[in-house]
Image 1 (cartoon, chains in turn red, orange):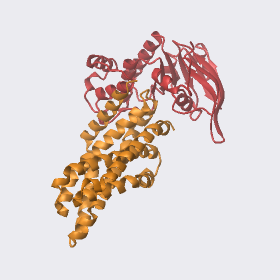
Image 2 (spheres, rainbow over the protein chains, first blue to last red; image 1 turned 30 degrees about the vertical axis):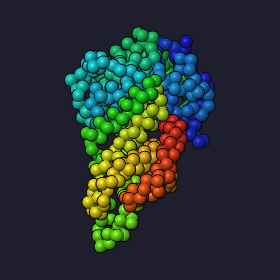
Image 3 (cartoon, rainbow over the protein chains, first blue to last red; image 1 turned 90 degrees about the horizontal axis):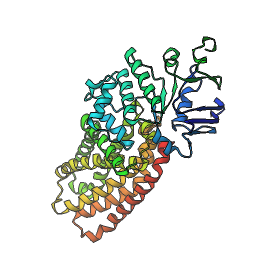
Image 4 (cartoon, helix red, strand yellow; image 1 turned 120 degrees about the vertical axis):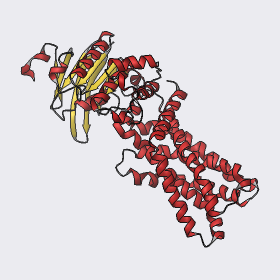
Amino acid sequence: MIAIQVNSLSKAYGFYRIFEDLSFDVHPGECFALFGPNGAGKTTLLRILATLQAPSHGQFTIFGQDGVAQKDTVREIIMLIAHGSHLYDELSATENLQFALGLRGQAPSPPQIKRALDRTGIGAFADLKIRQFSAGMKKRLDFAKTILAQPQLLLLDEPYNALDHAGVAITNQLIQETLDRAGTVFMTTHDRDKATQIATRGGILKGGHLHLLSSEQLTTDAIF
Amino acid sequence: MPFFKTIRWVVWKDLISEWRTRETMSSMLFFALIVILVFSFSFSMDQDAARQLIAGIIWVAFTFTGIIGLGKSFTSELQNDCLESLQMSPAPKGAIYLGKTAANFLFMLSVEILLFPLFVLFFNLDVIEAVGTLLIIFFLATLGLSAVGTLFSALTVQIRAREVMLPVLLLPLAVPVMIAAVEATRGALSGDPFSFYSQWIQLLTIFDIIFTVVSFWLFEFILDS
């Protein structure tokens, strides 16, 4: 089954077309990196795949489920790490994980939560409120969420933002683990050097059109 | 997705956040205290007039205090784009709505229970025999206000002028609840037989059911839009 199947997808705000007629597939076990200049529509495309926005035209499926008509089913198998951390400032790291996973119908045990926090390097801050977290720590906590949730499709919007060198290494390691269990990762990024360490395929969204790149082309400077 | 567990998680999250910040309850209490003091001073020379109007005064204070709490209910979800995570959550949206409504109901009812003794004190009310009935009226009217208010709080949270829009949209719909609450409270405080004002309590119950069912059904569309 294809992980992401996008067919003639277009998005416009009024008369302003963000992108049109996008078609591409992403298969299980692939990490697809989407590049493009600011305002190209990368985040909009990601938000459509995350069922947060509806496309203007076209269809897309996530593991065979229609992204518009069956979005409730799609939401059970995806997870988005975006610019906003989706964390509550007044709750601790542990409580945020319990709440987020609770809404997914999961109940991780305290040792599982501890392990996920330790793996992302923030185990020592398990009981600290999020309002005391830095942007990088919040990003790591987001990744701890994915360790526990194990989504089939992981959507990442600029995953390397705010992360230090160790954070980037942890992120790529977690992406690799997602791929190893036949999960799929779709990321938007400006950081080609970091993304190409892990991405298996990619594309450049520019001028409303998507130019697909093979794994070899990802490292070819001329295309960028 | 477990429906009741989702309700429990949302209530737990809202209560624990409020317990740690006391942001919503403190602003509700402070506002309500000012309202009580203003009305108390206004009617200090005419206790009879105050007793005639006390039911209306109580519900003006409770309703506007409630609106403050309801306004904060979804603005707290804007921090770190948490609203987006609720939208994307596979949890039943109706369960999220009921969780938010339950939390709002608890905040509003707690404030009302804390404030009512002040009304008794400032307006010299004799309520001993009516306490049970008054609690039922407070419970039902607050449930109705929180049911419809939670929906409108979600509807207006992304609007720039949400502080204005929430009362503008909510109050016309809340009028039947307020009228029923005022009439029932007046009857209870006047010592009338229960049968004289029981139709208002029945009306409150009917509004609670209608508001909760309709809001429960509409919430998914509002959250997804």
